[in-house]
Amino acid sequence: MSYTVLHLEKAKGNDSGMSAHIERTVHPKNADASRSHLNKEMITYPEGVKNRTSSIQYRLDNADLKRKVGTNQVRAIRIMLSGTNETMKAIEKNKQLGNWCTDNVDWLKETFGEENLVSAVLHMDEKTPHIHATIVPIVSGERRKAKKENNTQIYKKKSPNGIRLCADDVMARNRLKHYQNTYASAMAKYGLRRGIEGSEAKHISTAEYYRNLHLQNQQLEQEKNNKQSELKAIEKNISSKKVIENFTNVLTGSKTKKLEQENEQMKKEMNNLKTHKEREKGKLQESVSKLENSLEKQNKVFDKLMQYHPQIKDSFPIILDCEKMGLSPTIIKTLLEKQEINIKGEIYSSRHLKNFKVDNLKLTIEYDQKENSKILKIEGIQGEKWLDEKYKESLRVNFSKNLETISKIKQR
Image 1 (cartoon, helix red, strand yellow):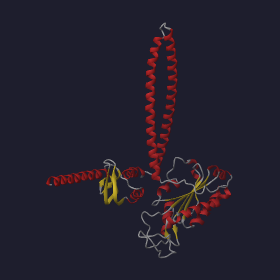
Image 2 (tube, one colour):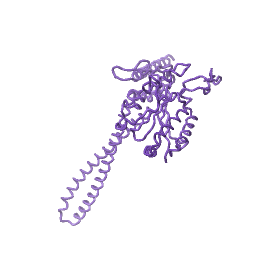
Image 3 (cartoon, rainbow, N blue to C red):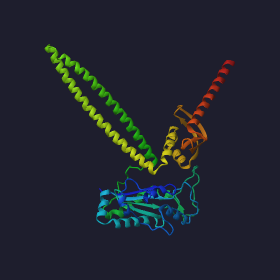
Image 4 (cartoon, rainbow, N blue to C red):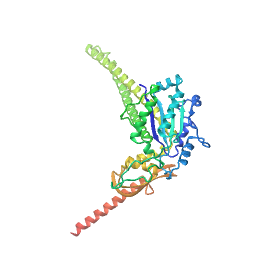
């Protein structure tokens, strides 16, 4: 089957990291440098604008927005457009790639607005030809209504026709389905069809992917160690069986026919056992080899991801610390974005196996000169140290309460 590939993703900040990938200022290992000259930017930048990052900012500066763009507000949406590898190669071979690119750009302009389309780059130096497009989510018209917390008032837009920056409107669920349908219609003449509608397959975030990859590496390492331990045990067992075999050879020199028969049978059994153990040893060695190869591949993927997302090196330990304290994914995500939050409720100490009630507790992510990296701090103190102090404080409180109880009992 030949399917369309259409993927939309919100970008953070000025998205300069993705600009480096798209414009090949940083050359990825999976790209063929000898074909990079075939890559092409299909959108003409405004005068004075030289790259994708500047083009995003230019659109924001000239959109006549009434509100200031927030620090954490989504300023751009990445769009990847392609199709099944075999079909895309056939389109290229039949010299239809130019028409395919034109139809993609026309669909992007018609769907998101020509002014919002700030970049569209064709990549020819990777396995499958594809387009990296970028739109700035500037919209107009009635805002989607949102109820306040007390459910008694409804937000009303001052001007229903005002210009605003809103990625959520562009990425609304019903719109995403509409994009897939219209894009498939535009690509039908190239033999590409829409993917399975209603599929339960979901995209995961970069942080989740790193976390899953790290867990897979740990599991592979543990399985490898277990297999190696089994292999050593088998080798030791085989060695001890050889001693028994040598002893049986002495017995074969006896003239007693019964002992000779028993010894021959024992030798056969020992040979069979040896063959079986050698076969098991071979299988285990093959299994260990496969695990080592798999682990090596996983580590290469992890190293490559670290190359393009070095900030994950700091974020990942913080994510693990937050999960140990029982913080929800929503709270963790907010902390990573804002670098500082206040929480209330309970946090858990895995070291002390105890929950602590907190109210308006300040969590921050700060750079630590000694550790040479960012760490999680609670009320300005390193996370683990704060939990230790909190535990000691709870012991003192409990001790005081016990003394008070004993004193009251004695007074009676």
